Structure formats: structure tokens, C-alpha cells
Image (cartoon, rainbow, N blue to C red; front, top):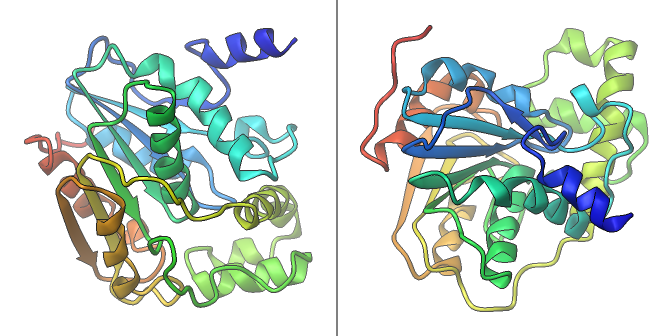
Amino acid sequence: MLREHEEALDAPDSPWLVRFNRRARPALRLFVFPFAGGSAMYFHRWARLVPDAVDLVGVQYPGRCSRLSEPGLTEFAALVEGARHAVEPLLPDADRTAFFGHSLGALVAFELTRSLRAQAARQPDHLFLSARGAPGSPATGSVPDTLFDADLIEFLKRLGGTPDAMLADAGVMAMILPGLRADLEALATWRPPVDDPLALPVTTLAGIDDHAFPPDTMSGWARQTTGPFADHLFPGGHFYLTDHNEAALDAVLGAFGLSRSDPR
């Protein structure tokens, strides 16, 4: 049964993956990892902006959108391993690969890279970590005190990025909160790494006014790699991407000598 489950995850149409624009042997395959409670569809605008040489692939955690009927995963290791089984088969047939993770997604992308290294599998050529402080850095308001609905909604208000109309809509919250709760439970099981740093380029991206993970919490990511390190700051808070998604994408593509296409 476990083998059948893994084979299903390895399939091209794995429920873990959102294939925004399938490309055969792309110059760059860019995997994007959403934030806690979020969906891969948060990155749908990038699909209109990436050039034809880029294959954009979203990682969809259980418990949201097309996977709404599935229970969320409450162990961080299970979240990472589920993503690994889906992502690993798509790594060999791209010239270059990159991971971009936002907030919780940054930790998933980071730990997935470490898991691939441990399995002697191909690692991404570049790791982009957005709106998540480095391991060991203090975080203000990054996790609610409890996981009751009211506290989760207050947590979303503090982070910003969720329209008030959505926060006040009980039906919408009923769809969002279970996935958010599971993600935060999983986050509570994550522990900072104690092994050797990675050996690949790492770039951090952050909002200047992010109160959950202020920009000065990002510099510690430099200690998690022996490769080149770069950082980018953007106007805005924790969800700076909402208003500056094109600029963030420029930073990603620019690292590979690529540029955005005209919106389609």
C-alpha cells in the first residue's frame, strides 16, 4: 500500500502539484511553495509572466483548493516528504531548477532541499526564501497563542494580506482555517537543522514593514549555505508579494539571466 501511495505521488499529475504551464525540457523549472493556510494558486499570476523557457510548478499542500477534502498534515516531516515524492521526478529533465517558498513555504522549500541532499538526489540550483526569518531568529506574532477559530482569524488580521470581507465570511473561513490550523500544527513540530549547511545559492526576499519576520531576521540564512547569498527588500509587510509580485519574480528570473514575458 505504501509503495502504491508513493507511485501515485510520483505521477505527473500528482495532487501535490499544480502544473501552471507545462514545458518539455525547460531552461528553468521553478517550484513555488505557499504560506501557511495558503494555496499554490497564490502564484497564478506568475504563470502569465514567466517566459516560455520557464516551467512554473506549484506545490499544493493537502487540505485546500483541489485537495480540500483531504485532511491537512500536522507533522512537518510528512509535509516535506509528501512534497519530495511529488517534486523529485520533475528535477532531472530541466536544465536548471529553483525553489521559491513564502513564509511557511520557505521552510518547506529549505527542508525539502535538505531532504533531497540526504537522498543523494538532485537539489535545486537556487533557493529563494521569502518572508521567513532564518532558523534561530526571533519572530514576533508569527504563531497564534492557540488554534481556536477566533485566534486564527486574529492571527490572519495581524499578518495582513487577507481582505476584511474574507475574514468576515464564515463560509470562506470554514474552508481556510482547517488548512491553516494543520500547517501551524506542522510548523510546531519543525526543529532547526543541526547538520552541515547547504552548498548552493540562497536569496532571501522580505517586506520592509514585515512585523512577523522583520528584514533583520533574514540575514541568518547566509549561515545555512556555503554558496552565494543575496537579499532583496520590497515595500510592504508580510504579504509584500501581493503588490510586488512582478518585482519579486524579476529577482528570481534575474538570477538565471532571464526576464519576464509580456502578460498573456
